Image 1 (cartoon, rainbow, N blue to C red):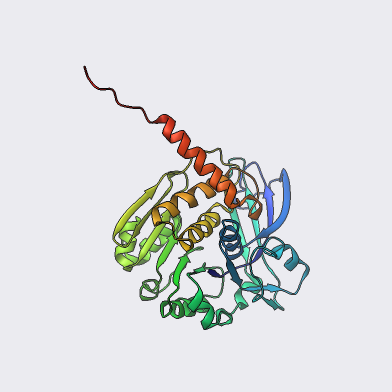
Image 2: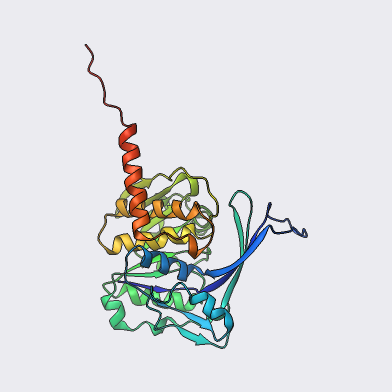
Length: 309
């Protein structure tokens, strides 16, 4: 079982030819409204990959809450969510013709979410507790310390990048960062942004996603790497969250870390290949099918060496 403490948002998405510069106004080709938020995205990705997921957090007592929760209901256990007087969190997302994005987030109810709503019994029964940085920092810090005293393992997606105490980060079992977040973390720690260097500085496991270059990790003294799948990116909005959620799901059901990375990379590629935030996140059977096709493709490209005469 995976417990997620995280953000729940409504995404306002604008499809533009180019991301505007400061002071510039551009016309969007299309727009849409859909559910999002790093916490919700990652919880949904894990659940669609087959995991039992309990989502904790907060939404507003407003019309946007229904949009924010529409994909979680019936898929993720949201019985512990709190309704707040603050508005439901929201994000404005611009996506250019190459699938690159720029995002601004208004936290709203996410900042009043309380991690103490996760009872001790739940932490004792969970295999992984998944966190991001779109909630109140004090609540996240408190939860990290609580999980460190429980059998559950903690996964912290340090996104958006925020400077936490080194000692606190060392209590996390797996710290996940993208390239920009790795650069920021390395600057605070005084080391290189590679997974091995970050892991050495923090004395804990670190995974770094690298977009089209795949992902690398340094876990329990072992370096791991997985390549990205060759795809034509349509929309990268929720790809990172998809990766994190599917990684947690794969680890939850006992896959090796290397196999979990491969599965997460495949799921993220699927998400990149189609538009949408939560709507782009694949189901277990879709990821299974892609993995089978990739294995078959790799098998066909392997040439049997000839024996010299």
